Length: 166
Length: 166
Image 1 (tube, each protein chain N blue to C red):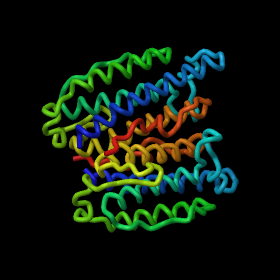
Image 2: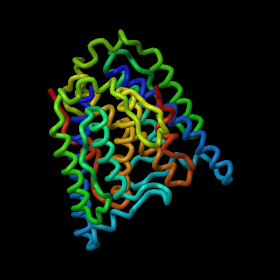
Image 3: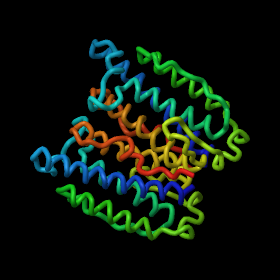
């Protein structure tokens, strides 16, 4: 399950990268600075676009780290342009590419915690299914929705990416 | 994997139901007809709120049906109120509750197709991970985002629901 779902996260990150390319193209066609996208948000107390992309990356990165015990690359959250966000996605993809099946042995029974849980722990299995996967898709979908709300021409096929038919 | 992820879909549907309750409370507090939410959308060529909820339900319902071969209840897509959408969620939850581990035996190797694939097929495993789960969270997150965009006070804890700590 872990290998399959992490592979799917990688696929979705590649799709996210393609939306950033589409956003840049839209800005060029309309003649505005594409970095305007980074501060757009759907509600004043929701994350802006840049943060949605950062957290999508972080959720995949931290999930793989917590399920394997391998230290993940850190990012400074200082991206100011679509290209810088694309570099962050590429960095996470590079790191995820190096995770092997052996690394994921025992992932489901690892003890996972984070500061905001105030000492509580979850099994790797519960953490992954109840926290990492829902959060990943939450921020990914919000990134998509912010671009669609702002006129970028992407569709469901750009969200799902190529499907593996028999 | 199928049982775990379907259980998670059920949990997310219960959370979705709680957002509809919050939306109704927001409408009452502000003095507007809560059925206004059903036609809200984030982009003119995206689904409105009612359709996002319907498709979230359908994605879970059809996934369980395609992975088990059991016929799922059909819905007429005629909901006009939040309460009618809540009834749809309840109907899907009732049906999902009746899916057993035995029903899911061999889910990963089932042959899945749908009309828009024009004769192509996917394995149950590929369909579930590449299509059902991403679509489910896509429409769920869009339903959430539409409510947040329209001032409903829900947060990440309402999205994730209770976590299973050790």
